[in-house]
Image (cartoon, rainbow, N blue to C red; front, top):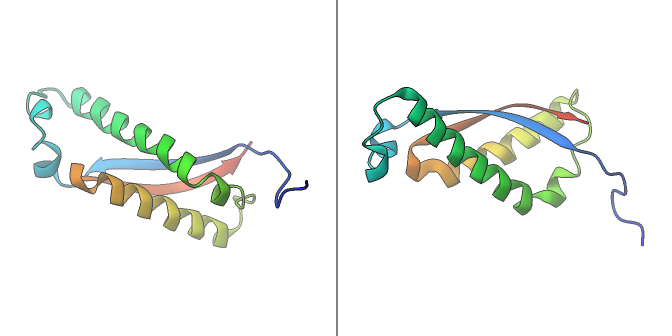
Length: 105
């Protein structure tokens, strides 16, 4: 059986995350004790990485269609897919994610 896209490629996409609503982020009891910014940074990174695994699993078939990082249309489509997913899943934590681009290895 030949699949829709028989090539195997590794896609890498870059995102940047920030705490957009600190009141939501710090309303979680365990986060109230964060004194140093590196504690918040670690927590933010952990939240985003968790969602990266979920996103990759939930959208593995859609990710296969992105093959040209120089194509503006592909960048726009992936940006919309990534930002919608992450921002919906991280809204309760007051976190916002922005797509920065992708590459193929």
